[in-house]
Length: 183
Image 1 (cartoon, helix red, strand yellow):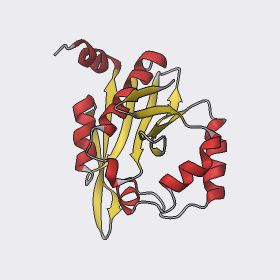
Image 2 (tube, helix red, strand yellow):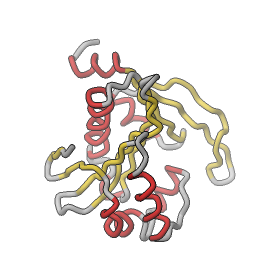
Image 3 (cartoon, one colour):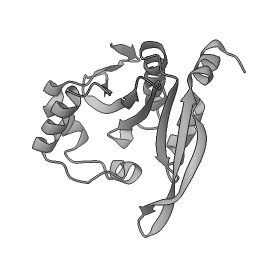
């Protein structure tokens, strides 16, 4: 699976991506990434190596690298927690640098993930969680078809104040309706 647009590409993330994945995404980690994902600020190269080895063996997930026109990894698209019996999975996307945000790359990569989830994996439901203070991500998710399904009030700390965790999902009928131009 490989797709391109305006010089950018999406392909499966591989264990041999370690050096570039670590250098571009985690060394140093963009503070905005920590803020918008609730992630940890520091990962060692060995932790990233172990993570890549672990996910490459996990059949309940698909991890894709987003590459810039120079072939550098600038982010990832992940479909994980796949339940084939119920036909559902979780989704997440991450662009490692602010330089690539608000340029349509996230929407393009998310649409790729939707096509993969509903056409290749034959899923019925794809869901995600997003922090209430990440309004840009919420807007992008809505734009591509995700709908808010609920809110876990005061589920996370934003500095010293609480913030909500928003639950969003897109169903296969929503996806097909959007792709065929239906209402």
